[in-house]
Image 1 (cartoon, helix red, strand yellow):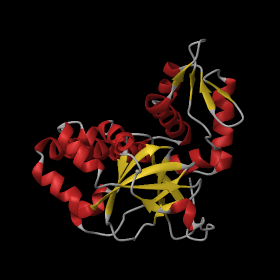
Image 2 (cartoon, one colour):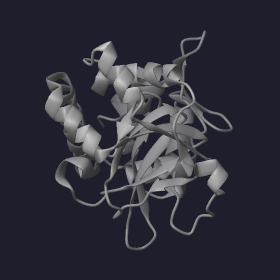
Image 3 (cartoon, rainbow, N blue to C red):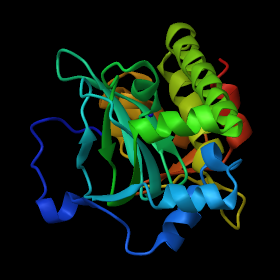
Length: 252
């Protein structure tokens, strides 16, 4: 739901302290943008705003580790968060990149199991933290939240199914083209010349962790895409010049 680990330096407690927001209005606005809470009446949103905590994280800070107890739902109020799976040989796979309005950590709340992945701040982020008990109460009390949660889980299952199909049926060129096209759908910013800029910074190491290959392989394929006029490489991001051509490359 980039790659850090348990050995990363721990920021000071001042950077990571979870605390009650000083004013409920910004929190309510943030909650209202979350698809999970769209069906809540305003009074319920106000009550929810008084029950969440605000946690600010530094760039690269681990929010929770794979295997930790699942005790809260997290909502991204600002910044970006990556969800990472770690292998036995220090390998890592980025399974999701989340932005403002996205939520994560719900799986462990539903089944009571340990965290299935690690969550890491890509850059400085502000998170809203809802305790597990209150989250389960909301799901039971408000059918629109339950329905939105089921839709989100179905969407995630479809996304994972697509990813497994890409890993199984596509070569590295196809997997990278498919992932870049998906990133355009999720975050592409339209420029005056019709190109689409991805929200950076985006490293070749990040892309390698997304598609399951080495950074050297990503470097080679990106160079081929650039030579074919599909993309333009910039210092900290990628500009997609030919999205239909990129989608075609994903079907080779």
